[in-house]
Length: 113
Image (cartoon, rainbow, N blue to C red):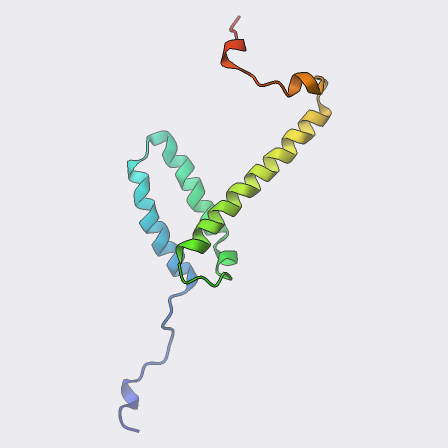
């Protein structure tokens, strides 16, 4: 069996975790151009991506950014969903009539005493 010595057996496709880390490092370069107050928000977005990465690995996509972006979108949607539920609960427990609570608060209506 000549030439068999040169045959390498092993993983040829990098693990999803390595792909995620490489892509987040590449995407992370965006952070250096953000204002200081926006950098923390960007870091949170990347943390969400890492948090949902194991689930995103189940997506069969030839474009590796798709599962990452989907992870970010899911994290954002989950946060919006939870905030909406909290607002609804607060509104249900509020003593302020709903008609007043639903009126938009305009900066011109705010006064400092």
